[in-house]
Length: 494
Image: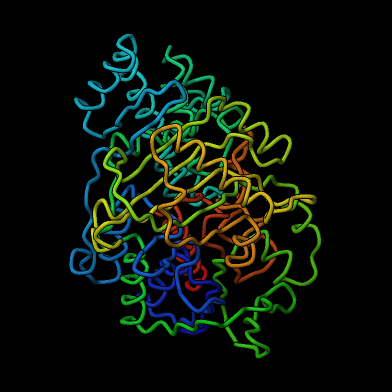
């Protein structure tokens, strides 16, 4: 095979999955990660005996990971143990009610029966509606590089293309959820799934109602030992296949000559390559790594970034049995929360609080009398005028006060703390304006406007990661690497 050198930019899951596939196909692969540890936003922190995942905390579509291991010639079960989570999440509503959500349909219907008896049958109808969207869209939106016209025009995709109206693209998530449920608490619960790709449920198209089906129809899982074990396992596979992994190796530029990539400049030195697979945020790449060619940069900068976040890692010196592995404490006014985030670009006065406690599943993640709390708040992406040090302190107080009202008075129980603001997401992971999921899906056409896996400007440049098709979240990011490698391999064969 000629011209088979590939430079991979970044060490997130998209880049790692792409590197593994490339190496398995016989390419010579070097991967460059600017941080000391591989994983990108899916990372890990250990603070005085408390262990935390610092990014994703729930795994869906585990078959995507199994397929990657199979392709690479390895058995996933030899490296990773996936544990089904039940309840998937415990929801705390502003009126004081609590509900456990489950992928077990009988348990879920029983929980809805207790919360809102009139909505039990509505859940059945909603799940069938979400499943129909999944059936129509999964092949074309999750497993196909939709920007490649020849691939899009295959006969198996015609069913979706001719039935676009059935995927509910013209209503918002909130409008469609409200058609099924009468109880505002259930509407808020299912509205929440738009945030899985960093979007506003009051703007994002109802096609995103595919997401609750993925969770409730296919199940939610935890990686035994923590989500970072997935990164470590993929790293082992990559090294076994011969991928050269370089950490603390910042890619400063993607080099190109006459619209053809020629390599990357890393820590002041050029590394020659015939292809570049960029796992870094594509918007940031065009702004900072690629010189010249202003038009694609200007077009990408017009796309709205996704929601960002503020993360508190708290080592809590107490046990709280009323909390589950995953918990959501909802704001009292979801619409107001998202208007502040997306319309006004303000830190919300009353943010929804997500708490993941992996020591519920792995006791060794915290001292015997403690728990490891990963606390995530929805935040606006970075815009001028925000003072994140001030907002960090304000949000800490807001969260403590809200938890105290629910019976969780933890302010004096916290032994260790680490905080990440949108500025940290930008600095650590080179994410566009601190966004977590790349661009938002706050328009009806965003799915088709998501950044392609193949550059339209430079031959030999490909993209993986949450900022490009098919989107954010562990399985989709891994699939982005698969799509990019499929295109690279086809290009190599020409």
